[in-house]
Image 1 (tube, rainbow, N blue to C red):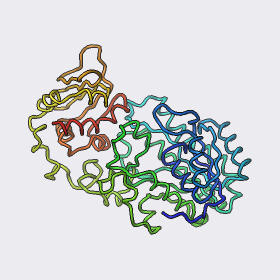
Image 2: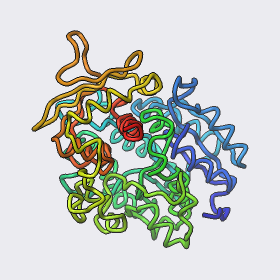
Image 3: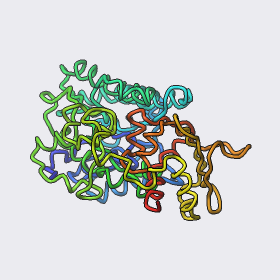
Image 4: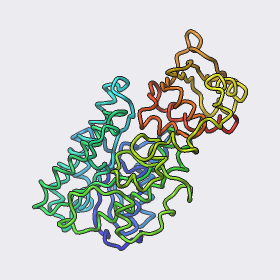
Amino acid sequence: MINTGKLAGRTLFITGASRGIGKEIALKAAKDGANVVIAAKTAEPHPKLPGTIYTAAKEVEAAGGKCLPCILDVRDEEQVKRAVGDAVSKFGGIDILVNNASAISLTQTQDTEMKRYDLMHSVNVRGTFLTSKYCIPHLKKSSNPHILMLSPPLIMKPIWFQNHLAYTMSKYGMSMCVLGLSEELRADGIAVNAVWPKTAIHTAAIEMLMGAEHGQSTSRKPAIMADAAYAILTKPSRSFTGNFCIDERLLKEEGVKDFEQYSCVPGSKLQPDFFIPDDVLAEFDQQQVSSLGIGGTSAAASPSASTSDSPATSEGVDGIVQKISQKLSPELVAATKGLFLFQVKGGDDFFVDLRTGQGSVGKGQPSEGSSPDVVFTMDTDSLLKMFAGSLKPTAAFMSGKMKIKGDMGKAMKLEKLMGSLRAKL
């Protein structure tokens, strides 16, 4: 989407903007000559994630904007008050607040530690409410004030709750702020909207969790979210408020026709994101949607979803274990570094040990004293489909066909691991 210059001289306060979608929104605004407050926690380089508030600030200035980097933990009221005050002192006011900071843990109830629950609700809900509270007095003085949440439409379907209840509650809490604040602030002319991606978005955080190559082929770049945010933030605040926007649909309304520009791998089949409406899901390949357990025709009825033609799975769990044992390698171990236990309903349990050396695989439990990093629980059919390639681990998890307990960072490498094993099988 082409910049129009409408954000020139306007001040944006963006939380969690040292990297990812938040930084992309900052850079998009900077091209107009905007003032940008990079409000995030990362002041020192992260061992695995690129970027700090200071490196992001340099990029903003190089793109044509002015920038104030602020160390901010949105859970801390005093830090929020200070950062908002510093922004007003430097730039004379605040015109736009982007509540982008977010915490995530895709765990079911029994696997969610309360400190993780508290983190998600403190950052996602409390942080959004708190930062909005202290920005509102300054937004009231702006000629075209906006608050934008990176949060989903409020779709009350069990599929979006059953696998990660705590996370869903926290993201929906952000969206409830949109519902409430849009009406509370309507008379003040402050627009309050939300934007959410249609597809998975590939960011450095996802890359750290899943590996450098994972997800790129099914994801879009953060730039699509930045363009969608730009389209919202340049609209008249009094007439465009209370909306839950999906990035692609909004940009189509703005006249954007080329969406391949946003694909990490042009021409690839894209993965639907969480929390998207049924009419948006209908625009995806329906076999893919069905594999997520959220609609469409039965994947099991499709020839391409059949596992019977795969030599790796036609022999069942025994065949998988035998062939994995023949194809393990030090390279696979180096890329994974984990001990995985597969609990198979209606079949035999087995483990894959990719911690040292050549790696190993065996039926039953790992040796005594070896605690699995991750335990995957699923039925035999889902396991065979995953190794055949007709059911992605991400889709199995989202649809409840696979349950995960343990180190989510290592668990999220499963899709890449299975791809490597399938290639070898």
